[in-house]
Image (tube, rainbow, N blue to C red; front, side, top):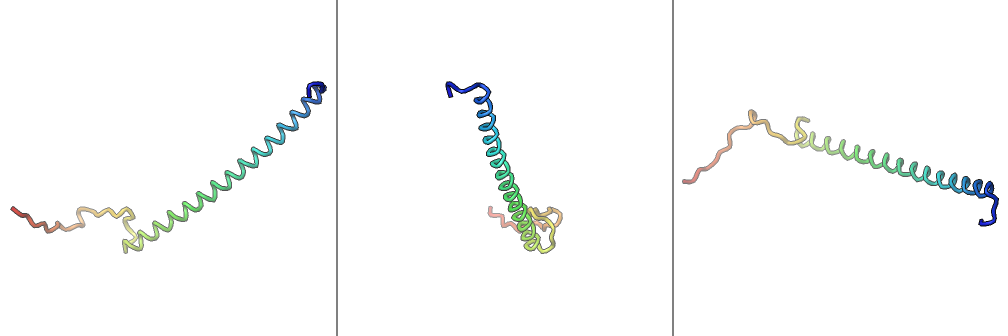
Length: 81
């Protein structure tokens, strides 16, 4: 390469860079596909959890399990003195 024509060296470097760009683009595409698949899996899991919590709730109401204080009777607490 020391005795190569600068124009030939430039052409060689350009080809090498094009190949590297192609590999990087392929890697980016693969990463995007993996990310999309992971997001779809996460969405499915979230939907299953919502379905499960609605089934447990019986009313399809509060998935967080929050009990409204107005709907909860006072607890019987034995006070020991």
